[in-house]
Image (cartoon, rainbow, N blue to C red; front, side):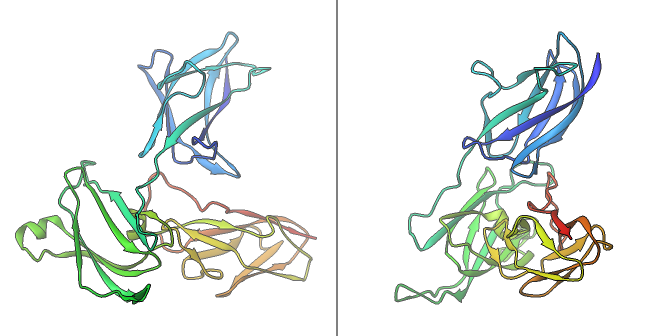
Length: 317
């Protein structure tokens, strides 16, 4: 018996990478917990690695899968069900210790009006229970002010989560609203409530969005063109990345208010950020990485996710 590296890959019903899946490993009977981890995006794949004992004949383990809003029906075989059984060989030989699990995602409800975006989401309290009765107000900032020749006026729009902690509201696409979330305790004490926080939100130009992402947007993905950044020693390379947020917005330029840029080895390359682009300077021959991180660290997500597309290779010749 020897310790082997085991990978569990997670995909959705379209075979696209599905990060953030909690994979829990138990013994073959499913009663003794061994370890757990979340799948993370690496390139075009999402997977988690474990170190598990293997042998020949193989050692069997049970894995259980979980991610909010995703259903797992057993994808390791035609007859498998969640929880799923995996067999670890040592040495791997013709039995590679890699397994693929598939989850079915469910799109959020869409607005029926093509000018509107339906923002919906679920909220929980500090104990993980559904947060019922959470008051949220949306105040139109009159952007847009006119849609199809009609003025967009009106005052505050009040919504409240139901007993399951769920709430839904239709908002104008590309609109800007002032969102105010009231604390339940203060709302119970006073009809006017009290503001827990207030911020401007920007509605994406699409039929649906997660309301939680609207309230707490973070930078999610950076796309580079070209995929590998090449520059000569002493020369500079201008790059305009495409930066996408969790609320569906694509930020302009280098988004210096939201993203920090740095190189891992400054003896090979340096990077400077302007409003409309980033500039890479080739210092010495070799390969290093350009790392992009979120400037705002106040929004904490679980599982912790890095920016997709970071780091990216820099080749200096």
